[in-house]
Length: 349
Ligand code: NAD
Ligand code: TYD
Image 1 (cartoon, helix red, strand yellow):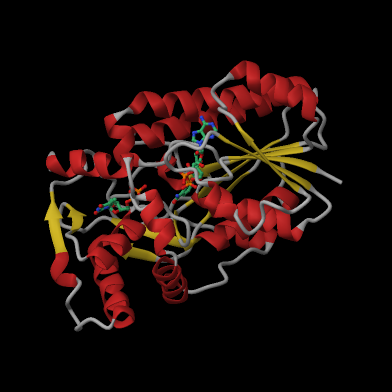
Image 2 (tube, rainbow, N blue to C red):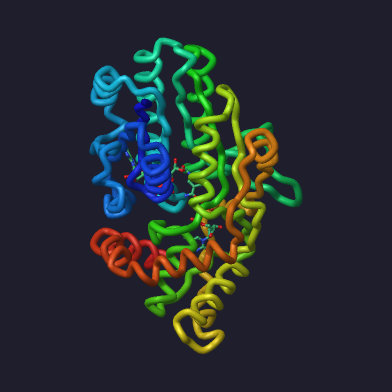
């Protein structure tokens, strides 16, 4: 019997991690702590929220008093920390939110865990980070776990800072910590502000597809369920004090990815070939736009035996099918503040 706190479990990746743990470990108690910001949505967990081993708590990791009380009362055996502000464009507009949640919130959790756990080596504090902390690759090569941390956006600076705090608590208080750094995820339940779900939503609605700059930036894409599987493996088999990179070995130039997605969706929507690509609109580039992320996940593959389970083509097809059959979800999350945010954002481009 284990009691695991998952933070940010109502968000995109968190909801897949909660689902996997609730279904795969019926003897664990899974506690999902989430503030339910614009990115958190309990609809993401409808299929598991009545299970006896699951409980939801609405709360803010930035509130230290609340977090200390929670840890003192609940006796968690482990933490899987995903709660974060996660969108680079928003971090350029409002960096303070990123400092408060990603840095202060993480430090609150670390501090509460180290007080409650008293260096007990059986506990596990697992921090979910991103390959963006390594910065941008100009030219060839891949990020490895020993690549110098060199964040370039306010989002990645806040994540890099939280990574440093995690390592510092491991060193200073002997908190048993683990960190993983994953490349760009895609899949069901992804809020339509990130590249792939935004494009899917706009293709459905036949709206312009805003490609930043010339579309030459490169990202490595991993299906979200494969990220959740990696988190399961690292949580159970990873060595404390270690960092593990997670990646799809699947690099795409943005413009090529958007054209491929247009092709897949034209077929599914019964539109003429090339119809959706005509919606591509090149817009002003993101300030300080990282050119390329590419990750070497061979440590995770060779030491812990993880590898991706689907190809990009399979994953993208599953993702598009999910969005086409969950139009209610899309219309719920794109109503209200989302529309205001996007109309302001694109008015400035
Ligand atoms: P998301 O934005 O979809 O979800 C974040 C969740 O955190 C939401 O449910 C939100 O309500 C919750 N949250 C935000 N602030 C909170 C607070 N103060 N207290 C409690 N809950 C709060 O993000 P995501 O894409 O699922 O990312 C999850 C984690 O994975 C993040 O830490 C992110 O940095 C990391 N990550 C994401 C990607 C990616 O491609 N999306 C890749 C690598 C790593
Ligand atoms: P995004 O999904 O925001 O993830 P990240 O910036 O964390 O990698 O963006 C992925 C890539 O797509 C990135 O190079 C920026 C680009 N992009 C666009 O060209 N248009 C868009 O509307 C968005 C949201 C992103």
